[in-house]
Length: 522
Image (cartoon, rainbow, N blue to C red; front, side, top):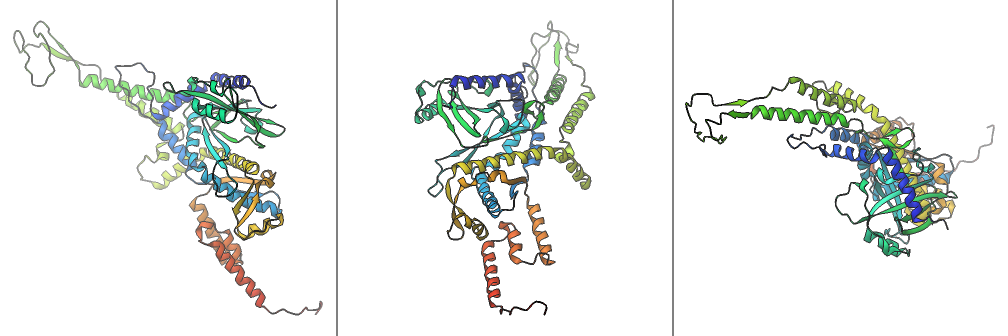
């Protein structure tokens, strides 16, 4: 039996927690989250000091997130070899992956994923096959995606970032006891009724949550991924062979740290700057308050009781013209205080790559210069963009792996060209729909070149303009080839237009008279 004992998995989980504790991951994530959300005076014991927040972290992270995910992400598939069947499967998978990305809302998750990476240091998306999803055909089930916090992903070898090279991966889930009991009972495991709540101080939970930790352990045996669920003492789901060759998750650190699978966040390292800005501004406000509303010193032998009520008379003993009270003022605030605050804010933003020009917080006197500065400020983010595109490619390959194992035979929509390419595989359904056995994908995943990149309106417009120029100059002479290269959403009923042109071309060919064979040499 390939299953692991719950105590063994729990021990491996604790080893991962100990490693994360040794690099101060939990405290770093907690501090970074508070800094990003504006809770920047957490734990400070200063009851008489005002607590202003000049949050420079949130707009900076928002800027970096927007720069990475503002452009839509497109994935292209090309075959390493020119075999017709491989080309056909590349086109088929392109459409299926696009559908799964839309249905699983992964594109919507991109913003939160990049935000997690920038604030916490890493982001992770976990994919699995839900067999209960209705598809409108005999084959049920579809791919689901979920964001996992970096503190809940523990690598078997924490010194490398490559997911697929890990000896095992443990995903910690905080679930209700009732939910965990139900799943364990449905799976027929013993001791399901003994599952009890537990505490996890690293999750920043508040109050009695009535949750328990369920560990999903993934490991590889004989080239395939095995999975098991358990609590500290109870098996929730017995070990099973998923059939996948790839771990079903993708991982992206913001900035790689040597010999550590956790990356460094944007905020980490600049927290002392934020604290100094808030503290200086708080003390400046306090000084202004003391000077604007000074303490009153009065002669208690002549005034029994002082009152600050407006318009109320104060009775005195003796001459009222004598000085019997005076304000007690503190020293004026030096102008250098505000200068150092402004300078610290400006320098911190510059170091984070989010200057005022990059954020657009400048007067548009010289728009050309502003645009040039903004473009220059975006250059360092190309490293994170490349990492993000690789992240997308990784989870797309996982999607293809899940399709090949769990999809089975499904009816898919195809065009005529794809139908003709797949026809040798033994299919013979009407055009536009046909059954496809996804288990035949086999190693197609490894025969494909998958490229992820920005797919904006302007890049598509450039593509269309280039095609127009090539067609007008008769470099492209075939109308069918021209239409097939144009993005589908630019022309409605594009496939029908292509079919009509092909029909006209066939009719013209049939109407041409057959010329007699001409002897060679004549």
